[in-house]
Image 1 (cartoon, helix red, strand yellow):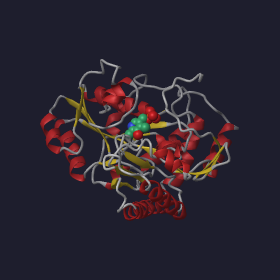
Image 2 (cartoon, helix red, strand yellow):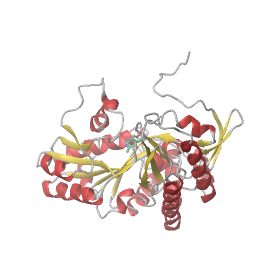
Image 3 (spheres, rainbow, N blue to C red):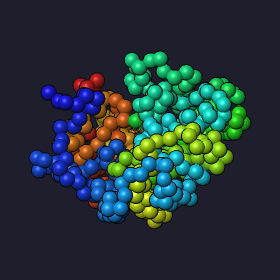
Length: 386
Ligand SMILES: *Cc1c(COP(=O)(O)O)cnc(C)c1O
C-alpha cells in the first residue's frame, strides 16, 4: 500500500535521469518529454546555466528569510519588471500563492470584494484560488467557497459587460486557458476586460502561471495583445523546476502591500531566485523568444497538416509552444498509447491532448512528435461511430 495520499493518478513511469528534452526511465526506456513537468522545465531538464547558478548559490547561502536583504531577489525582480508592464514583485513558492497574493492585493487596494473569473479557468487549489477556479471538479465537496467569486463564460464580452459595476475588485483571466483545454483568449475580449477594469476602477489580473516565461514566444503571453494588466502572476516556468512563484504589479499598488501586510517564509529564497535569475537571462533573450515563436508556428502547422484526415481529431490550437489537440472524445485511454511510442504528453480537460515541449526543443524532436501523434491518433477508432 502506498504511503502517499492518492491525489494523483500517476503514469507508470519512474524517471531516473533527465537531460534536455529526454527522460530516461528505470526500465531503460527513453522518452521525448512534452510534459516538461507541466510547463515547468521550459529550458529542458537540468539546463547547465541554471544548474550552475543553483550550485554556486548552494555553496554560499541557502536561506535567510525575508527579514534580510537579498540582492539576488532585487536583481531578479528588476529583470522581470524590465520585460513587462509591472514595476514591483512579490516572490512566493507556487502559482496558487502568486494568485492568492494577487487576489488579496486586489481586495486590499480597492476596498471591494467581488472577483470575476471565467468558466473552465484554473487558478489553483487554495481556498481563494479554488473559489476563483471555474471548474466544479476542482471545488466540489469543499464548500462553502469564499464569497463573491463569480464565474462568467470565457470570451463572452456581453456577459462581462452585464456583470461589471463599481463593486468589482478585480477581473482575473488566463491569456490561454491551460488546464481548461488550451483555449486562447480573444483580442476583443481581453481589450474589453482591460477597458471595463479602467472604467470601474477594478484591477486587471492576468494569470500567467502557465503561459508566462516564454511559453508562448513572448516573455508574457498578454504581450501578444495590446493590453496592459495591473497584476501578472507567474510560477511554473520561472525556476526551471526549482519551486518559485511571483506576483508582479504596477507601481501604484506598492503602497497597498506595505510591511507586515503579506508575507512568505520561503518566498524568494536565495536558491529559488538563483534558479529564476539564470532562467530568465536565457528565456528573455529576443533571439531565444523569436525561435520559440517560430518553432510554435512550425509545430502547430505540422500537426494541423498531419492530423487533418484523422477522424478523432477536432482541432489543433494554441499559442507558441503551448498546443492542444482537441479530440472528439475522451483522451484518457489514448495517452498511454502515445507514451508507449516514446512521447510523453498530458491532457487538458477530458478531450484535449496538451503538448508542452521544453522551449529548447529541436525541430527534429518536433518532427518525431508529429509522427508519433499521427500514428497513435490514426490508430484510434471513434467509439461513437464504430
Ligand atoms: C498550474 C496553474 C496554477 C497553480 O499553480 P500551482 O503552482 O500548482 O499552485 C494557477 N494558474 C494557472 C493558470 C496554472 O496553470
